[in-house]
Image 1 (tube, rainbow, N blue to C red):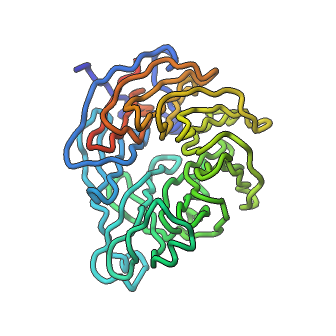
Image 2: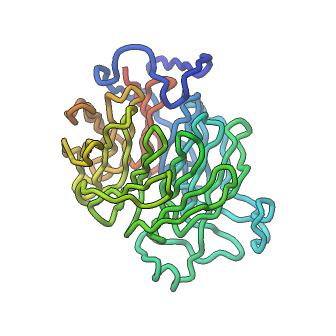
Image 3: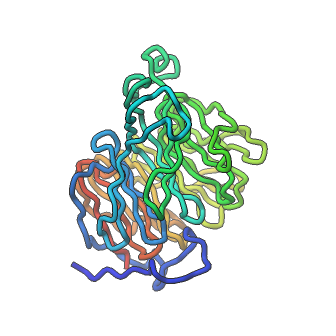
Length: 362
């Protein structure tokens, strides 16, 4: 196993998500598997704080969030269990479980927000379903779900926030003003005020909103509508839908370049990644990476993309400038989540069947 060095103890004034690991540009590096993490996990996603921690969300299969340091050591296992009354939600006596799906850090990585697919306990309806409409969910008796906020110092849940039906992806604006949550079965987007930890606006999105990316100046959000071929633009100054643009069938995940000029989108069913020039919202490049490409990550220098291909059991590294395939590496069965750890330059892959793979990119 290769030596794994971390810069998590280095003092820097650079915001966590803009820190660039020392050494060669990322598109000149090569991926090498250096660690396989197992245990009582079934990770749906992995997310790096870029301050030395990586969070894995284990959904209803384990009802936990597992936290690792950048060297791959387990730091804490956080149960998804809460007493709702302690967080201002009476009517749910006893303990309530969540089902962690995705995570998003505050700009300074002081907090991480985790979406819950469904809630389990007194006063909650049946488990949600990926096959749903707002009408069918209501008819089934489904109830709104919640987002947890976790203090990354205490590694404990300190807020519970009500959102919509089957929330999936979430993102925090760089100015730390809003938390955005895509509600899969509600067909809408929750905009939560960070200061009040309550919804301030709910916007209609269309069938199956999922991935969210936010411009560096916090003015615009881009939401992937997975049941369509479009990205919806949200004006975060007016909290309104500004329009949409075509990207291709089944858009799932979106990331934005550090300078805010380009958007990169994974198209799940075609297995493609596209690049959009946000000056005119047009697709300028496209590449096939594998069957059912799911989550994307971007290096902090903006030069490389990493995409997991769920049914191909691979991860593909792309050059961001032209989407050229730089490398394809095997993973375990059903890779579903990926994150870039800026403290090391390592790439972590969540494998749904029960492990996390860590690749050095050197």
